[in-house]
Structures are given as C-alpha cells and as structure tokens.
Image (cartoon, rainbow, N blue to C red; front, top):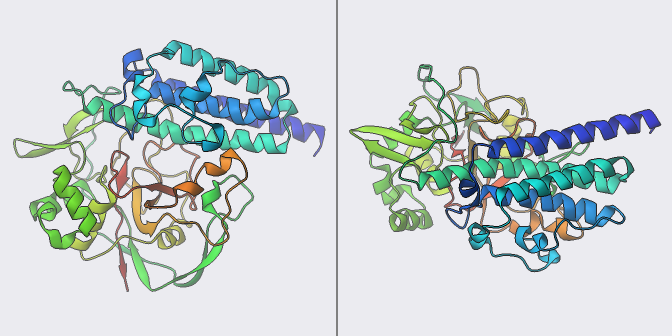
Length: 418
C-alpha cells in the first residue's frame, strides 16, 4: 500500500468513526438525564449506558490494548460499562444498570468526547489488527443505536403519559397491498454466509453449501390489517395454532395482540417512537415474538422461512434499500410502495435456530465472546428494521433473539413448500 493509499484509508476510517459516534449522540439528544438513566426491564438498557458501553468498547479493545501509554479515563468505568465479556472481569449486574445514576449524562458525553479524541489521534499509527477492531466497534455501536431507540420506546411505553421520542410526521394514506404474492425460491445446492472481502460479524461465516427443497417466499411482510384478521379469528385463543412453549408463554403473560397495541372504541392503536396512533392497516405488523409469528404462519397455512431460504432470496436485493435509519428523526415502519423488499422496516423471524455454521470458530480473546456464546435457545432474524442504520446490513447478516422477545421491530414474512 502506498503512502497516499494509507492516508486515504485512515481518512475514510476516521470519517466513518466520527459519523457513527455523532449519530449515537444525536439519537439521545431528545432525552433528559432521567430518560437516559432509567431502565424499564432487564432486557433493556438505559440510553446513558449504551453511550458509555460503546465508548468503553473502543477504549478497552483499541486504546488500552493497542496504544502505548494510554491511561483509562476512569478505571471504575470498566466495572460499570462492561456488558458480558467474562475475560474482562467482574461487572455491574445487567438488571441493575438503571441504578447507575452517576456518572451523569453530561459526564458520559464527556467520556465519549475523550475516547473520540484519543482514537482519532491514534488512528494513523494503528496496525491492521487494531483497525479491524475499530471497524468492529463501529458496527457494534450501530447495533447499540438500534437498541437505544427500542429500549427508549419500551421505557416511554411504561409512562402513563406515553411521551413521543419525536413529533409525529403527517400520515399519507397508502393503498392496501394486494394479496400476498409468492416468489419461487432457489432449490438444490446453494451457498450462504459471508464470503469475505468486507466487514461481517463472525457468526455470518464461513460461507458454506446448504440444500434447499422446492419452496416459495412471500413477496412482502404481513400487514397490520392481516394481523387484525388473525386476532378476529381467535388466533390468540386457539392452542392448535401454537407451539407448546409459545402457548404457555402467551397464557402466562396474557398476550392477546402485538406489543404496544391497544383497542380503543373498536379501533386498534399502537404506541411507537412517534407516540400513540391508530395502526396503519397497510404497514408491516411489528413487535411480535417468534411464537406469535409461528402461530400466525400456521393460521395462514404457511410457515416461516429458513434463514437459508431467506438469504438466497434476499441476495438479489439491495441491502441499502428500504426504510432504514438515516439520521436522528421520526422513524417507524411504513407501507411499501414498490416491489418486493427484503431489507428495512421490520426484522423478519425465520424458523432457524441461531447455531454456528460448519467450520465456525470464535476469535481469540475477549472479542471472541461477541456472538458464539449466544448460540443456544435463540432464533435468527433477517433483513433489518426502520431503526437499523443504513449501510449496516447485508444478505448474510444474522440477528438473533430468544423466541419470546418482542420489544424490537420484529415482523413476519411467510414461506411455503412447493
């Protein structure tokens, strides 16, 4: 690599880093110190914690480990803001993150500014391994940007005032999509997984061959109106539609509609980042669990796609397309006005368990804990959502959650055998 190329690479990495870091701060800007501190459930983290944890990631794995003479901004932050890295030692309990009233939001922002400046100064002298960790950290922070918004939404949903994150945008009426169309899928031997040459998380590879039986995937995701039909037909009261664990969960939790839905005067409403509003019948249904998605698919005489079927179909589509996060402003799923889209709006549950691909090996050291140790009891989601930063996705991207989780922007695309 020439000196000119090295400088251009450093400049590009510095610009990308600055953009990612600035977006996190902008997303948190509407929040008060109290908003950013409170934790609404063990699965959700305070916005202040997200802002600090992502800074700790860069400080620990890049500055501490690869910059000679770097001294921690505050040694106590390693205990407060480590998430789950056992190799990094003891840490504050996840369910008690909302008890961290100090440092304040302004102090966390000062910590971010310190880390940003130190990393920007260090970039020109970082070797390839450290630069790869910077890129990992940027993608890690983009994941936390999505979590920051969904966690803040869950927090606001607990407030009787139901405050909006942003002022709602005017709704433009959109015609209901027609009946579900079906896209005949590839069959036989098909390669899936990331093939190298650009960034990907470790769980996306190695690239390998799978065998697909004759099948078809829906040309769009399930809409709110279709979900209302499922509810009206007793979908939440018919055990024959549900997996045993799912039925037990729905009965135990009293689940009778997607998360944040309420029926008011015979009209279904939903609570979103733009406050409580009537559901848009043409928009994709969202905030449903794997159990609900599977029950709906059974009711519809279909099934959920496997992740291999999904990836094979989505590979022909632009991962930068669709409704994704472009900045700090109003965002919610919206009706599709064009042809089939596989990216954006809502994460799509698949029927595939989150397990390692053949030949998978976790990286050495603490960063090897990133994905591999979670490959148990979770299901894969594909495609991204309206709060996934644009440019973060690719066809091989594997998100994953436990089957009962539904506070994310999760939705449903159907598949069927041929």
